Image 1: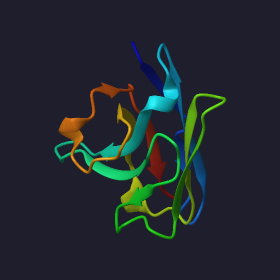
Image 2: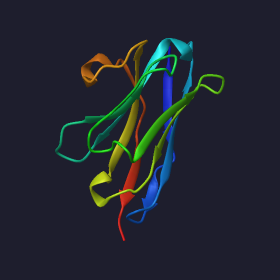
Image 3: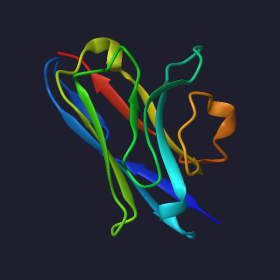
Length: 123
């Protein structure tokens, strides 16, 4: 059974950068598309980005295009989210999630979730 663990969150000033990692174990990582989602208290969980199982297809929310980059290293069973030019509105708990093969924009289609890592953008 696939398990996901996020890391890399923290406190950063506006304009700064962070790199989140999503480490997988317990199943064949290369079968899974991985999505990054974020959620603030009282708000819907929204998808930030996604990468297909082979890494050839990536998708981004309009709010992060040009600032965030998703990548994966299947040899290390890890997906990364490089976040640059961070803004206070990027403050959220970030989750990674897995589904077979292709990305979906709908969180309901992701069957495995990590526990989340908190990102705070503040001066």
